[in-house]
Length: 585
Image (tube, rainbow, N blue to C red; front, side, top):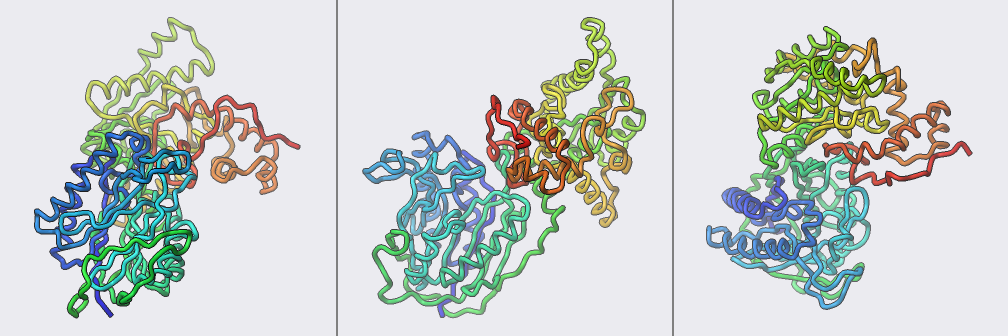
């Protein structure tokens, strides 16, 4: 059987940075070529970054993407890398003369191309366009209608893009019909909890359906609220794993494959799902027999808490650095939320780039002040204390506020102070709110909701506690100082905006609350179904009402790392003005 050394580049790309992304392709292609790769693949929309959203609707950006692809092909050849075929994703436009799905000819395409010897030898567009969750690809793109097949070293290689594997039909069965010996799918598949197990099962299933080895090349890194966990996979035709890359790491995954030889007269024409086989030959002659050097390997999987924590670190790092910042600012209350956010920030950016401010009021307990200082001592972040009492007294003297207005004033003074320091010193402010609080509106607009990014925005409070315990335990196992003071984990949560206040004055126990929220927010279950799941009817009614009436607050909260199947943001789009309520009947 012919041999082929395949290189899958599991790397990060930055949206809009065509030059920087092209540089990464050249660098990684050189590294792969130096290791003897015969075929090199990069992730979905590698040249433009993913997702480009409404940039896809700008003709200037599409033109720039196309020009960058042509220039990249020439550059690879000029730098002595033209002999290695390279698969790379980019933004293209349709050249057909008829409208599709209500879009005119020339509509954008989520595309990929094979570059060889200084030119584009084959181009194709994504066939299945996702239109759920965070995906809006029907808004932007027209689908491809071909099954691209390239012949490399005597092996026929079929090509696909991400959703082409996730949906039934299309390019997977067409690969079997075309008689290809390898199917390569390039992907930008966003992370969510437990998706790695689903992904592995999917790739195994598709390999069996395609009747050939399948290579799944994924991106890693972060883009706004999305995080990409990598997890590139190669499986054989029986669905057995040959190689699997680590999560949340840039990796050059090399694997030596034994693949069936291409047929002398391969199938042609239109096959499954109306796809037309589009073939191009890069090289007919098989590679001279060699001793395999890269036989695969199975990177150790992260456990559930480690996986989520890695996603939060990756998301914050990407958002901060890709937007040109180097340092972050956190309001440290001594509570669990700000403590976890600070720990994540130190792991993402280094403690030397994390600045914390304690902003006590007359209601702040001494133990909370001490816990904030202890967190700073343990992590090594920059720390200062600025009391808000003089500002608070000035407002109260002028306005005479009481009750909730008095409580919220304290939070808003802290928000104003953080933004003032941010403007003065150039740090971006991190909002410490968690998903439980955001769901029920337990936050103050222009107070604890201020910031450029919310690292735990998609993390329920019960998970916040679990991640804090996990991070401390891991530190202990490494012989390091646990970053989060034990008191921040064990004491009852409180906003400390009035005497002896605790969260349970206003909210049910977080384990109960989060169970209800997970059903209502993440799974879209109605009131009756949640009650049937065993929750108190009166409590369910109250919680759902709180969620429904807090939509306007969530719209004004900063972006934050998505880790669940349905985070607040593009995943869950509900009207603010909305009189629908879940009723008892």
